[in-house]
Amino acid sequence: MWETDPKIFSARYRVTDRAALHFRCTAEHLEARCDGGRDTEENVVAACLYCNKNRHKRKRPKDAVSYGDLVRSRMEQGRWHPVALTHITAPTG
Image (cartoon, rainbow, N blue to C red; front, side, top):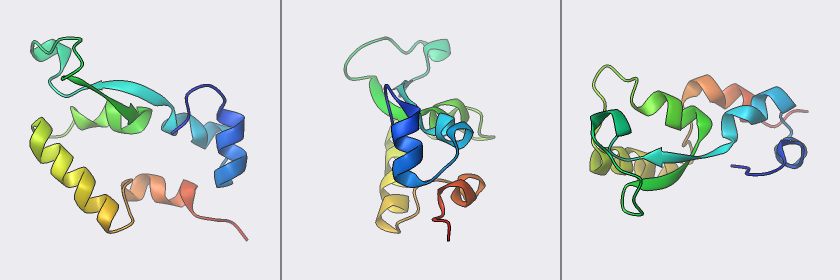
């Protein structure tokens, strides 16, 4: 993720500037604000823009603990981001 300069991220991971926008660091509410989640340290974590936007759009959104388990499982497999983003993170050349 990047917080201040997408161009540095783009160069480091060899992705386009547009693709880098998906990886902007955002504040993710574990319990969505629309569901009563508050802006507290226990309820807000860092997440890339893509994950922040799409977590709650799932047909069956996972609770915070289950979503955390999903993240850890994918990271252990070396494939955190969904297939939809894999093509923009693949090294070129």
